[in-house]
Image (cartoon, rainbow, N blue to C red; front, top):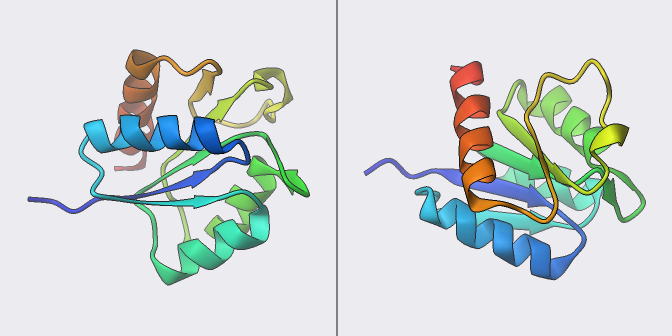
Length: 119
């Protein structure tokens, strides 16, 4: 059994819980949740995630900034943006985007795309 770890960067706890449940259904065995960029980096440094899901707007900044900071320390990691602000994601981003409300099918597909692209 492959142990997979995810980091959810989301400042709305109910959405974070929903994303966590959906990721566990996809086989992720552990999940950390951060609501700001500093906490996200600290958690990622403690345990490198196999996948990051990030909202665009989070406490004190953006999910994009948090992801850039994590990757500056740990290198490339598959990312899926889960957001109600899809138009705010950088135009040069190649990461999949799932709009809120979260569709389990779309999230699963986006995770597969992100992981395959990183392989």
